[in-house]
Image (cartoon, rainbow, N blue to C red; front, side, top):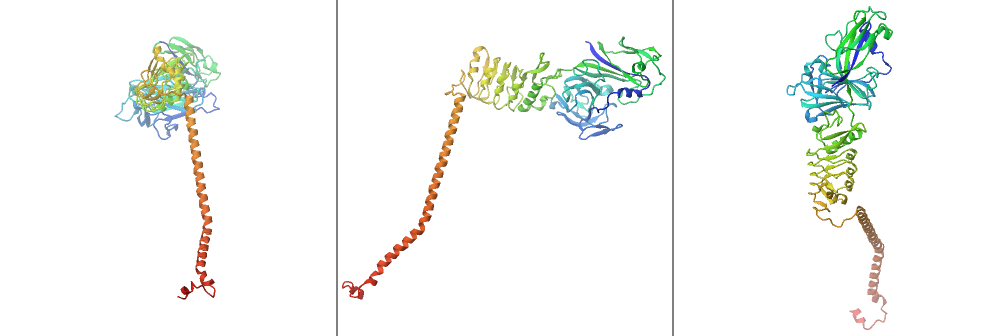
Length: 557
């Protein structure tokens, strides 16, 4: 298998110090985006000798913080790290948002957890934007060049994801990460530069130095070369001429300058031999060599379907051990558990064609957004404790062939929309709390060699194997009945209110009348008494002087 590599030699005309001039010749009118994170740290950190700022930890999806043990002098002098136990899921990521679109150098440093009770050297994979670019194998912590990983990546959606994938051997750990914007033309090697590729740093040589390092000074080189054709040489890669008749002063027009060249070559083995062959002069001079492996960038999963899966994750209450971080289908070596992927050649993106989450202890509800997974052919949520209704939207997934929701706690009726699934071959709704009539569009399906199971739902009726339904009313009739009952109830309420108000008015009128008649009754009673008293005393006042013979004796007596 041939691998393609990008070779970037830094060729000097005079001195190493001028190399910086060549690198910094790019447009500096806009400060490049730079961010450095000290993983596991609660505070910002500054490190010597350049007082470099490392931001406190943020953007992670899970994991724990711990003290770190630095395995190499290359690793920054930071004291904390973040590690990801398998109980937090096999995939964990950092998401860095609000990143300006462009080319970036992503550099990661690894360290060991300072805890003797944990596995001292985890083995895991690392991806950037879904493309696997580094695998930490056994023995990495004792090799200086393997304590870091570096890649050049193109950001085109203002967000950068860096994910760590467990292989089942220890807990992935990360000490720090750097995201450094670079000039768009810094490593340009052709039309594939950027959007379709990731450059993985395979080797970095600081020529003239005993050890590879990022900030080790080089010694000055003599400045005896002052004119063109005094130093001319060829560069050969594995015996083939990659650059011919290189004359730095002639090519740049300056004495104190540097020249950065790159060349893409295909390598079938594990050896890359670079030869500097003098043409004029006694020798050639090179300051540094970088070798990058060109990795085709993975095609991502359709954004709409990734969003739908994240909604499903929250709605079903997916256990933490599932992870479900990053992209569900890439890297292809680490797809999400319970998710089946298919590459759509028309869209040139991955899509989701299957969900298998049976017997996982799920206790949530099925969201209506599940219908946004329009490429699903199979759904198996059986053997859980999922509640709520069967979503109507399931009937809009055109290619669905298998729907197994058996042995859950679903309630309500079976949506008639399921009858629109013309590709449906297996429908298991048994073992739930569903009720009502099985839609007629589904009741006849078993005659056409499809397997439907509606048993163990006490409230279902209407097909052989289930009890008979009572008088069946259409949805419109049910709505009409409900409306009629509501109107009758409102009429009764209004009638009762009117009767009560009328009765209150009558009672109040009686009380007012009684209050008005009370003084008149008292006066009439007094008048009657006076009349009676007058009648009693009138004989004494009206007897004639001659007197009545019958009454006289009585009066004398």
